[in-house]
Image 1 (cartoon, rainbow, N blue to C red):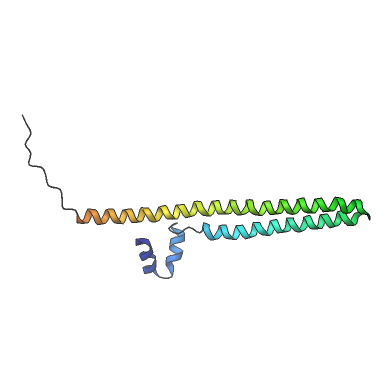
Image 2 (image 1 turned 30 degrees about the horizontal axis):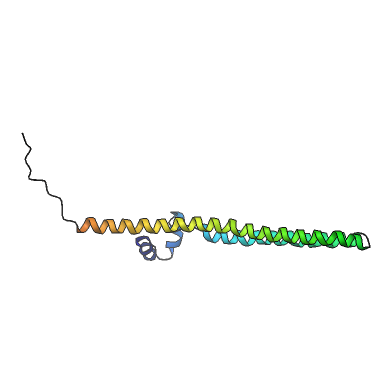
Length: 134
């Protein structure tokens, strides 16, 4: 909470300062960009599979080349679908890790604020009036 108030107080330089001091992580948005770029690569793979299947079908006229092209097409598209799922799981893993980091930071700040309030309202400890036995 305190860092949010401090960044608002700093004005337009607050975001820049948060990025320089690692108070705000940019990994979340970067992971989203990497996710979409990875999906683009998988889409290129899927298009190349379709092109390879069409190339196999047109290579030689006849039923034999079509029978060879059809399984290549199906297997390639299944592999592309599996790649999409794996890529999504990979990126979600990293997003979850960084969200856990942000949640831990918020919990630490809340704990520090509670600790500061508790120590400010606690009366000072006085020396004990007990005399040593002896």
